[in-house]
Length: 310
Length: 271
Image (tube, rainbow over all chains, first blue to last red; front, side):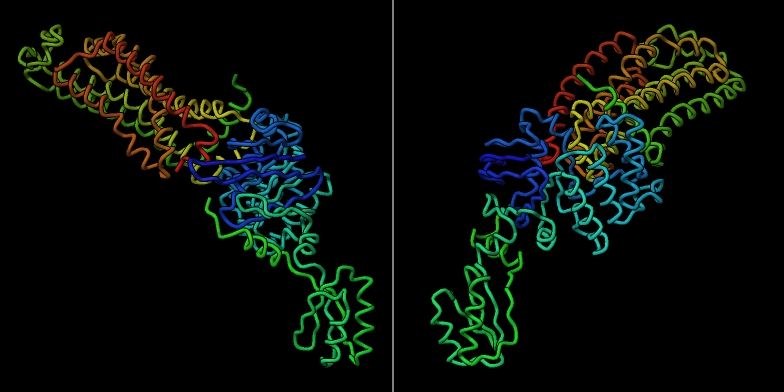
C-alpha cells in the first residue's frame, strides 16, 4: 500500500530523510518510531504529498508521489500532530468544511459527520464551539476529520500525545478498529507502549531506517530468547551443570535466578530444568524473559549514533 | 483550473469565522461608518453655521492655492468652498477603506490559521493552493469593496439631504469618484491582500501584520493632503493612471505572494 525506494529529503545542506526504502502492506498498522527530529514527520509529509522529496521514489495506494499528488491527497487521511481545528466553529461546521473539500455530496456529508461524531462520542457537544473542547475531544474530532471520506490509508502523527490515559485508550482502540476495517495505518509515534500494542510491524528510524520488523522479531533479533530459572539457592554445582550444556548460551546469574539465552526454548527448557534438578536445585519458577520494545528501541537508536536534529 | 465547490467551501468557512469574530466585524464596519458619518455630521453643522454667517455671500477668491487648481470655484462663497474641501478630503479617505479592511481580514485569516495550526490539515486535502489563496483573497476583498461601495452610496444619499449647496453636492458627485470606486477600490483591496499574505508568512500576530502593512495607506493620505492644500488636483485621468500603477503593483506583488503560498513553503519556511 505504501512503498518507498531511496526516499530522501534535504533542506539546504541538512538531510532530514536519507535513502528510506520500506514497504507498508495493505491492512497493517506500521509504527514509525524515532527520536524527536529523526525525520518521521518529514517522511509522513512527503508520503501525504505535503512536501516534495528531493530524491528517490514513493507510491501510496499505487499512486506516485510527485506525479499523482492530488489523487493521493484525495485518498488518504491524515491526523497531524496538532489538531488544527477552527476553534470558533462547532464540530459539525469543522467536519462539514473538510467533507466539502473532499467533494462529498450533502447526504453523504450529513451521514458521515453524524456517524463519526457518534462513534467518537462527540454527538452531544456537536453544536459547541470547538474552542471549548478538551484536548482529547479535539483529538477525536481531528480523527473524525481524517476519516470522513473513508480513506484506505491513514497517517497518524503522535495520535495520543498530550492525551489523558482514558482519552488515549479511546484513540488507541479506535485505531485498532480501523485496522479491523482493512485500512492501512502509518503511525508516527515515540510512544513505544502504543506501538507495541497496536503495530503489526515497526520501523525504527533516525534519518535512515535502522530496522523494520514485528516487535517480537526485533526482540528476538536483538536479545535472542532468554528463559529465567528461579531456584531456592544457587550453587556452584548448578552453575557447572548449566555451563556443561552446549546449547545454553550466555548464562547469567542474578540473585537466585539464572537467565539463559536459548535458540529453541520449547525444546531446550525441559533439558535445562532436568540439568538443574540433577544438580540439586529446587526450582521455584521458569518463565520466558521478554525485553520491552523500549529496550529494543533504545538499543537500536543508541547503536545508530548520537541524536540528530531536524 | 479552479474547482468552484472547493473555493466556495473555503469562502463559506471564512464567512462563518468572520461572523463569529467581533474584532473583525468591528474592523469591517467601523471605518466605513466613521468615514461616512463624520463628514456628514460636520456638513450638517457647517450648513447651519453658513446660514447664520452675515458674510455668507462673500466669495472665495482669496482662498489661495486651492483655487488655482479649481478656478471654477472662485465664484463660490467661502462657506461652500470650505464645505467642498472638507467633503472632498473625506472622499479621498474612502480609498483607505479598501486598504484597511482587507488587511485585517487577510491577516486574521492567514495568521489565525498559523496560530491554530489548521493550515497543515487543510493543505493535506485535495484543495490546490491557488484555490485556497483565491478564496482567501475573495473573502477579504469582497467585504471591503462592498463596504466601501455601500458607504459611498450612503454618503451621497444622506449627503443630498444634508449638503445645503446644490453646486457643492453636484461638483462632489464627479465621475472621477465613480472611477475611483469601481476600478481603484477593488485594485487597492487586492494590493492590500497581497501585502497581507507576504507579511503573514513572516509573522505570527495579526496586529504585527496590520502595523507593518499600515504603511500602504500613506500614499492615499499624502494624496488627500496634497489635494486639500491645493498642490494637486485628483481627476478622472489621475485616478485612471493611479489604477494602472496599482494594477501593475498588484500583478507584481500578487505573483510574489502566490510564490510564497505554496504547500512546502507554508509548512517549512513560514515562521
